[in-house]
Image (cartoon, rainbow, N blue to C red; front, side, top):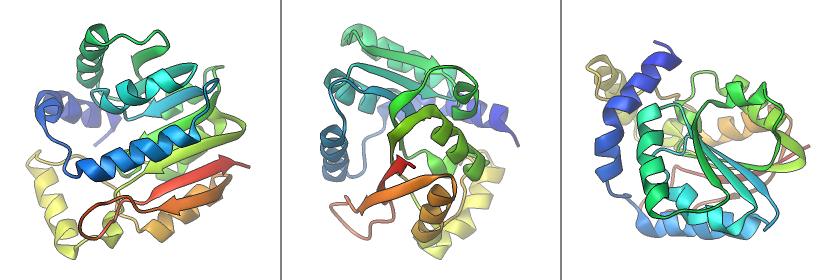
Length: 211
């Protein structure tokens, strides 16, 4: 499996993903509220794994510029259709990965990654790329499912679902392991929160600063 196969999976899933409902709307709203409070009006923001652009369209109006990216061209096409319907001057969508963007000159005040880090194949390498994408003191804000903290049955079922094409690649790590990897990539973790409105929250909201 490769990043190309990951892109194909999300291309195939893009329409059903766009129709799906957010499972914890209250928790999502809390995440948006906290993220918006951390962003500044003159920030240049990059979102990785933006999907069909729902979060980007909610946050872009609060900052100077907002580049929302995803590995899936089909996801980005849907996001661009939404942007036509609700335009923001400073918002742009692009098919790209953190690794590809890190080789370019642009740098950002904040990088966002929601429901994203568990989907990358080289987590340590992706975190290093995110570090490189930020200006000194820039913020990395993420909210990530930590499968290592979830019901063990999920970890057992996941490989079977992947074999029949019903689930994407997903890395298994705990919140503690994720925090360690973020720190090892050169970040100072300045805050960890739990935003779920129901049940056990295995998706920590982590704010880190480029050291």
